[in-house]
Amino acid sequence: MTNLITLPGLVDVHTHLRVPGGEHKEDFASGTAAALAGGITTVLAMPNTSPPLTQPAVLAETLEKAQRSIFCDVGLFAGASPESIANLVELSPSTVALKIYLNDTFGPLRVEDLPTLNKCFRLWPRSKVIAMHAEGQSVAVGIGLAAAYQRPVHFCHISRKEEIELIAAAKAQRLPVTCEVTPHHLFLTQDDAEQLGPLGDMRPRLAAAEDVAALWAHIHSTVDCIATDHAPHTLEEKQSDTPPPGVAGLETSLPLMLTAVKEERLTLDRLIKMMATNPRQIFKLPIQPDTHIEVDLDDEYTITNEMMHSKCGWTPFAGRQVVGRVQRVVLRGQEVYSQGQVTAEPGSGKVLIV
Ligand code: NCD
Ligand code: ZN
Image (cartoon, rainbow, N blue to C red; front, side):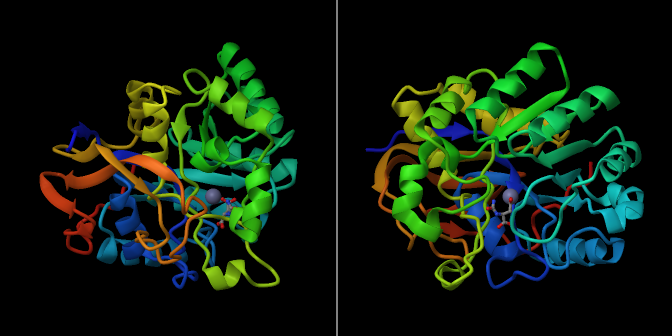
């Protein structure tokens, strides 16, 4: 039995494609193949690469590499750092948004001083979004900046009760803030982190059941986007003495969310809003004409490490029962993925400039 439904091509606004410098973890080809396998036809790639996307020359070279190898559409984030703040204006035309890291995570990109934050808000073009990695009270800093400069701020991977409640309060005051939540923060807790060890470690860390419940309580209201924070690291790196934080997510996001729809934890309409409509609107991404994905809702299966297209080859969701398998992806009228295989030509995706 099959029960095929057609959905719009999904958008993931938080993906680490690891180019340049981390190609042993992921590259443009493997990462965009994983995206298609997950029903995602647009990804926004993060700038915490090595070197980071804070220099115009690095950005130009990375864009060229992307254009040669991507299977779906890709937009790049520019990165903010105190040393390279003067580059922001030059970086802006070929990137979709600015990413500011206020808290510790993988890679050296960090902004921890108010003068640099002020400069980011003054220099970055008003037409483009500023996205923030902000945890705990840093969320209040971001809301303050959105209010003071009267411009949109998008909060990445919100994971705690007090954070989602603060964002709800800011929205109630009509402040221009939006937020994303990851599937791992919706489906895993601190208890799973204990079981998974380094394979369950990411930033923000997995939270308490109470935090997870708060995210679900806001799923039809405050949560604008589901974003994967696809952050692949090899098993060898994860099992080393200094495991980097981060887990893959492109291929498991849709089946996890469709399973939640089946369990009536959210509606299919809301899923489409959070995984396609809102991300496109918030980041002002162009529509992809003649683009859709076909998903078999009757396909019930167990997630395995072996089914991953991502180079890292593992997922913290291995062993989990889900429903909904992406059968086929059509991008601009061309079939680009079918029955587990990428059928697109390398470079057939577009680099997005907004
Ligand atoms: C990300 C990575 O590995 O690049 N890791 C993570 O734990 N989420 C960085 C990030 O998005 O914070
Ligand atoms: Zn990330």
